[in-house]
Length: 61
Length: 415
Image (cartoon, rainbow over all chains, first blue to last red; front, side, top):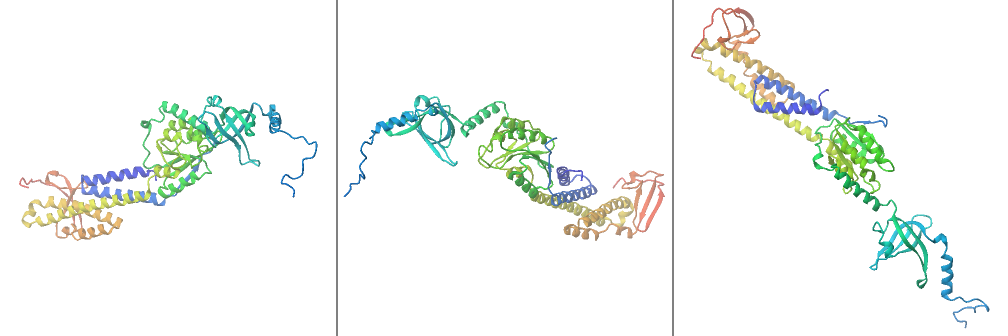
């Protein structure tokens, strides 16, 4: 997944804002909803499936 | 009966006067080994007498032979003291042992006293550093930067074996395991720790989104390296925002003042560094619900529009407006089919309900009744104005399509 959580959440919020504005055609609204639902799923997966990763820097850079 | 005096003193035995014995002791102690010497010890029973003379003891505890010497520092000597002695302070005292015959005691007459690398001296040093660093503007609140909301990488500058890293890992794996923790290991106390901490900060700076620097609680001495100007300047120089967490609630170190955020403990620092996934999941669920509500509202409106069209399609008007109406219906049909598809994917019961309702009004059914949809170049033709004689069109019917060429176009002005 190349997008960061922050980018996905930002896009999701933008989609919800556009849906609230009610601009665009029904077709666009549905497309936005589909994209939004995918983003929610990806964000949820990222949060629930992630396992913490620890990296230790070597003393010599 | 014998008296309690016991046996008589044998004849010829020398009887000493008290002053004679005292004089002998004075002679014994009048030894250059006890004159002008430096003594290391811990101050106890310290009293600053109204006269200005200081009465106290120097003790050495904890060893195999606990020992104590009573001391006096006359006010003329005491006036040169560079610090205020306190019980428990480690000092170096210079003086001579003398006997005070009227009380039959020997004492160390202290001429000079220095605090030996003790907390007092170090506290003063920290105060001085604080003034210097403050004057350099390193503690200016205006320098503080906001922390990133969703860090991908969290840098931790602490001991690889301390409790701090364990606490931080435990908090982050509970709250936001999507983050990667990058440990930049360092000693956190002892000689040279300040150099190591500063170096560890420089090593991790720029590689991460936020840095936590610190250690768990300890004595003033244990936390001392975090007061060092090298560490404070290294914190201030970081391009990445820094959270400082040195010691526990009450402890502070100078590097706290230079950081973008001061946390009371390493665990608290970790909580400030990353968001809480439970809150995020709640927020995501809220966003999804909001989107569904908005979409359902939109679909309902579209459904009502289709219904409205159908109601208005009186046979007498069909001959005039059929094309436009059909085109609009076909367009809605397309959208609703997609909406139904998206709802199937979501498998949400609320949406499934709407789907059932909308499918009951399938605009495709209208084709069954003998109407057709006109398409040109892949899109639906909504208006006669969009067509010119000679245009090629496709007529979509219930069971197939046919291609046609427009012969003539008449506009209805009254529509």
